[in-house]
Amino acid sequence: MGTALRIATYLRKYPGFALGTISAALLSTLLGLVYPRLTGYLIDDVIAKGQGDRLPWLVGLLVLVFLGRDGLNAVRILLNNLFEQKVILDLRRDLYAAFQRLSTSWYDHRSSGDLLTRVSEDVMNMERMLIDGIEQGLIALLQLVGVGFLLFRMDPLLAAWSLAPIPFLAAGALYYTLTAHPRYRAQRKASSAMNSLLMDHLQGMRQIKTYDWIREGASRFEKVAQDVRTASLGIMKAWAFYSPAMAWFAAAGTCLVLWVGGRSVLEGRMAVGELVAFLLYVGMFYEPVGRLHSLNQLIQSGRAAGERVFAILDAEAEPGHLPPSPLRRLPSRKGTAREVNFKNIHFSYRTGREVLHGIDLRIPSGSCLALVGPTGAGKTTLASLVARFHDPTQGEVSLDGVPIQQLSLVELRHEVGVVTQEPFLFQASIRENLEIGKPGASDLEVERVLEAACALDFVKALPDGWNSKVGERGVRLSAGERQRLSIARALLKDPPVLILDEATASVDTATERQIQMALDRLLAGRTSIVIAHRLSTVRKANAIAVVEGGRILEIGNHEALLHSGGLYAKLWTIQSEHGEIKTIEGLLNLN
Image 1: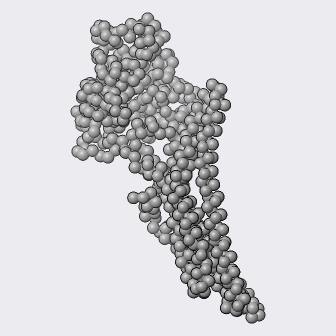
Image 2: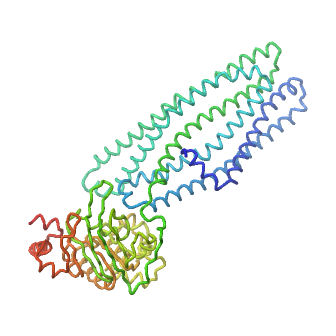
Image 3: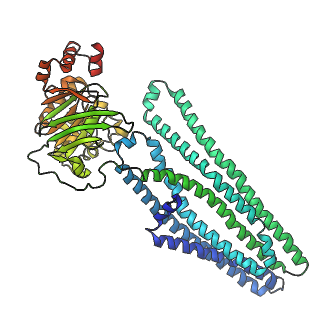
C-alpha cells in the first residue's frame, strides 16, 4: 500500500469529523459560487437600469451570502482542528506503542533526536497531508467542476479560451511532483541530523564547557544547520520558480479572457455585468488550480514524513512481543526465587560474529552467580538473555524448567529485575522514579528499599525528601546517588531473579561497602546474577564464572577458584598486591 493510502487509513476512526469538515467546506464553496452571478446581475439589471430601490436589497443579500460562506468556513476550521488533533494523537500513540515493541538493540543504531523529530515534526507533516490535503483537494476539485460548468453555461467560446493555460499548469504540476520528493526526503533527513546533534550537545553541555569544546561544538552544529539550510533552500528555490510560473500562466489566462470578452462587450455580444461575472468566475477557476499546486507541495512533504514514520511502525518487534504458541505459565514459586538454566547457548549479533559459544550454566533457586571477565567477554550479553532483551541463536534459557520463549514478555519481565552500570532516572520525583518498580508502593516500602540501598539519609536531607525532582536523567544528583536510587527501584520491584550489571561501579569505596552489605542481606533467598569487574564485590557469591571470549573458562566459589590456581586466582593475587586497581583490564595490564 502506498504511503498516502496508508496515511489515509487514519481517517476511518472519525467518519463524523471527516463528513462534517468536508460538508462545511463544500457548502461554503457553493455559497461562494453565488456572488459573481449576483454581482453581474446587480451591474446589468440594477445599476445600469437605474433601479436604485433594489440596490440595498441585493447588497444585503450579498452580505448574507458572505456571512454564510464565512460562517461555514469557521465551522470547517473548528472541525478540522479537532479532527487533525485526534489523528495526530493516534499517530503519536501508535509511534509510542511501536517504540515499546522494538528491541533494545534497535535503539543502539538510532539517535534520540532523530526519533524525536519523527514524533513531532514528521507526524505534523503527515497530518497536514492527511486532513488538509484531502479537504483542500476535494474543495478544489468541486470548485473546478462547479465553476467550469457555470463558465461553459455562460459563454462556451470564452470558457474554451479560459482553458488555454491548463496544459501548462498540468505539465508544471507533473514536473514538480516527479522532482520534489527527493528534495523533501533530504530535508527531513538533514533536520533529523541537526536535532540529534543538538540533543547530544545539550545533554553533554557540562563536558563541552569542561573541555572548552565550545568552538568545536559550535562548528559541528554550524555544519548540520547549514545542511538543513541547503536542503530547505533546494525546496524553496524550486518552489520560488514553480509557484510564480504557475501564477503567471493563470494570470495570462485571465488577460486572454479579458481581451476576448472585452471585444465581445464592444461588439454588443456580451453585457458588462456578464463580463465582470465571467472574470470573477475565471479567478475562482484558476484559484483552485493554484491551491492544487500548493497541495502538491504539501503531499510531497507528507509522503517524505510518512516514509520515516512508517519505517518505525513497520520495524520488526522484539522477540516475544506476540504471545507465544503454546503459551505457558510459570509454576507457583516455592519461596522468593526461580531456578535459571542456560543450555548450550550460542549468540550472534547482526554482524554475524558469534559472541557466546555453547555456554551451559545452572543457577539454583536462591543462589548468586557472579560473572567476571574482561570487557567484551560476553557477560552482559549472557545476562541480557534472561530478560529476553535478545534471543539466543541456538540453545535455551529457562526459568524453573519453562523455556522463556514460551512465556509472555509481561510475565517474564515481572520475574526479572535489572540494575545496569549506567543508572537512568526519569525527569520526575524520587518517589515517582521508585514507583516504576511497584506502582502505588506504601511509604514504609519506599523507606525500606531506600534504607537497604543506603539512599535514605541523602534523600531525607533533600528539601522535599523523596518528592524532590531529580532533573533530566537525574542530573541534580551525583552518579552514586543515582545508582543507589536505581538499586532501590529494583529492590522495590522485588523480582525473583535480579541482575546486577556493575551496579556498584558508580559509587565510592565506602558507599560500595554499605551497598554490598545491604545487598548481601536482601539477595538472600533470591536468584541473582552479578556482573562485576571489582573482584572484591563477588567473593561471597555461591558461584563465580570466569568468562573470556564468549566461553566459561572456570567456575566455582571464591575459595575453590583460588585453590585451582587458574585465571581468577591469578587476578585475585594481583588485586591483593595492587588494591588501587579496580578493573579486570587494569589487572591484566599488570600481568
